[in-house]
Length: 447
Image 1 (cartoon, rainbow, N blue to C red):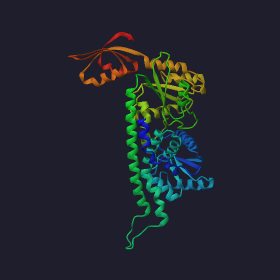
Image 2: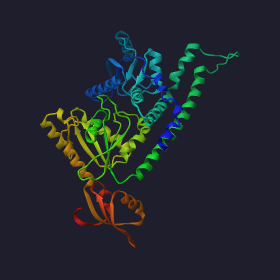
Image 3: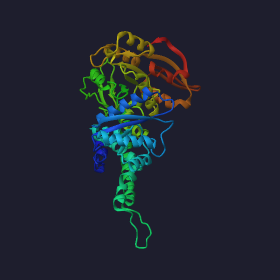
Image 4: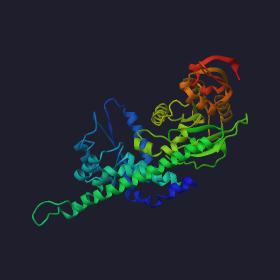
């Protein structure tokens, strides 16, 4: 109830404002810069992804272009001749929108539109449009709204510049220049946006704290979190493991809200599994930051199921992108199991090679259930493989003692002159926390 109250308190923030900025056009060209050292095939794959993003946003792509440059042009991103050619071809094809496969600076977007009369948006704006449409719960809408406002704030001049252009410059009777209506409106809007950002950030902070309190009050259920590149099949796997009936679409960012369910293990030990928003390459930092309340599920997990579309030729690149995001949110040290999904779409020889390449991975097909039993067995092994240790901790490590009370079974605990003496049963995946304080292995075997 408290969380709902926090969210409803800011319902007046007008979550539909972004509709005004969503694409009015339904056809576009996409374009990118091929930087020095970048492989052309990687550029084409990235444009393929942008085209899928555009499709999810309801935009039809009529053409795609790229320009080789050491770095994007500072003022217009592309070179003048390239933009003139694009402008002509867009008119010929009937495309009225240019989508650039990068995040444009406000200056670059303004200059392209002013000089070449091209309506332009960037990759981030396409992603925000998709987020806006797919956010279902009030919490997700709040997080998306924060990302939208942070994106809009430095771009207000571009949005309001048409007022002064249409009316001409306004001068006082004495002939001195005065500020135009657009400039005054920019100041008003900046103040309003900053206030809304402050309110939403405060609300999300409160939600985050509330979730942390809830987690501390939960029982000692093991927490598993599904992570992976968008469209890797996480929601299909989630449904396969839990019969949750979560929406599954062959579109990017079909899942924005985290969903949690009980996972039944053969040992009878309690476990909770959560599905999360998919990751994507070149995801701006402020988007990741806006979704920190949702991504906390990954940070708090005992085990991450890193789901990969193994049939995608760029799977190795996607794995690295997901690991980069995990690092950015502080989840890089959480134990991880690589799940090679869609293995039914590759031949058995390649599947065997991939499993050898990715040590300790599990090949499955969430769509038809292949490998699910082996996956569950591996999950149980990683979560429940307990080790018994005798430890001596210095008194400076009282925080670790408190942590062990949460994650381990404390069989003996004595506070002696030389330190805190413990006999503990620790899950194998958490053994690294105590390895510097082990006196001996209490039994020499797993418990």
